[in-house]
Length: 142
Figure (cartoon, rainbow, N blue to C red):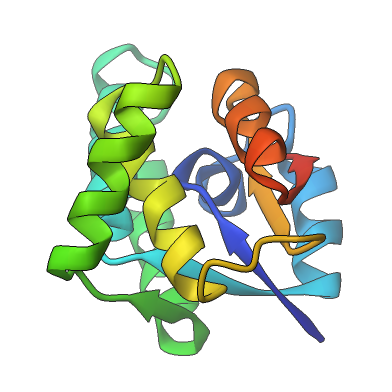
């Protein structure tokens, strides 16, 4: 299985039934998961937001957290570093991204040792995918 960098927006549908769930599960059979260190926090935040908006039941919330814990056993996590933070700062200067998205993209850059050419980057965020593609990643919509 080839490794791919997975943004939080690509992982949430693995844990919560959403429109993208079937497509993302198909991608998970093809690509192993590489994530940014803060991704579990972002995912839990997404779960809570879905509960608050009534799109996820309390039972569904518990089930989503169980799936997240299972995913974490097998994924590779990119740890924070000074170099990664500097890369995120330069990404903010170049692209109209939120800080969390800049960290995601900087983590992907760190994972591939600054050689993104054709490396898979999965995301459900069009703006983040566009930035990833401009950096040379193979952006895959999740």
